[in-house]
Image (cartoon, rainbow, N blue to C red):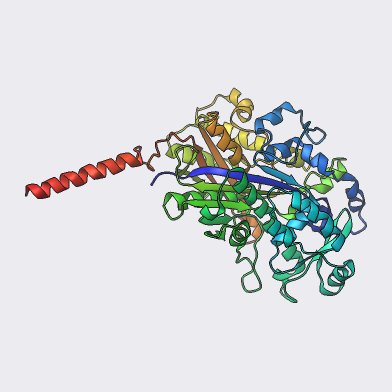
Length: 513
């Protein structure tokens, strides 16, 4: 079997200012524990407009309108910088405003749990009719809306979760069960956000790459949420729900969970499924996490910065059979943080970076671009977490020095040459390696790079089941067009020729007897 390829991608951001206050964990906990806090009073003054979110340089990189390296042209920090002429639509996807996304949540709802007010529905229906990816059939699902009094009744009497837009209640999400905490209105709200944002990324994957959804065989959903009920609280399945919505009628699918590392786990799974011949076209997809909105908001407000964690993230990547064009996924060069790896930085980097390189007889410098935890330093530095990508690059470079593959003087410049500035929102799973895949596909096609490594890391101790870290990595390589066999160094056609020759020799031998 020949290696699978990363064929196409779609990336979306959703600006959700009202969800920061009403759905972000930092804010909802603050409202419970300190409802009169100065932070909650000041927060509305630190919200960005949709126009500011669109023109923000890292966001333009995320949707493919700028290359990651172009961020170096802007002096950091970037929160007060603008990309002139920035648009909501990019090469890889879009940035969607909150009102349209609320409508998309309604469109994604198949159990009539989302109720939207009549005037809001009338207004947003016009916008959705103009969206190039939203069909008339989808718009019809918005219906006519409800009276506000009916919505308030659901909220006050049936514990429905309010939906806010511009500070006003314009709808609600009803609970799906009277006593099941896994089906309460708050959880259903979170789940619909995951589904809708993942669906939007899936739509862009299909549209921007002219892919027929009927050609998709399998979907792997890899966000941080998990849907289920009291009998199987994380049973899933977001994957099949998104596939259904996107019209992928020939697809089945399942969810993969691994905290922040899940997308890279999913990439490896997809590559293995295609390479083995089980499926021809596998999509990995993830929606955004409302809990992470405004996660570091207290630090941002304290330093008089805007709330920078004001967007949900989503992505979708298509993994297909080797087409001789797109970058191959080296399933034989996979890094693994195993149970016995340990938690020291050197042990983690060794298991994820140098172990797979050694297996392929490669040096650290043989990888043109490392996509690590590509978190935006505008967000993490004010919160005291530093520049996460830069820290990763320094650790990789230090290992290179130890292996005599780099000079000590190269450590300072390694990140600039073999890395990228971080641009992804802190949505947990979203920054972990995968934001670069869309850019990488273009870079490989344009002969800008020969090799890249996608690195995903996670914190399993968040579930209170283990103190283990987690992490996996995979190497992407330029496609030579030869459709090389895994570990053989010969092409598929050469193998067929050898088999045919062997069969002829065997037949001649039989006839000779």
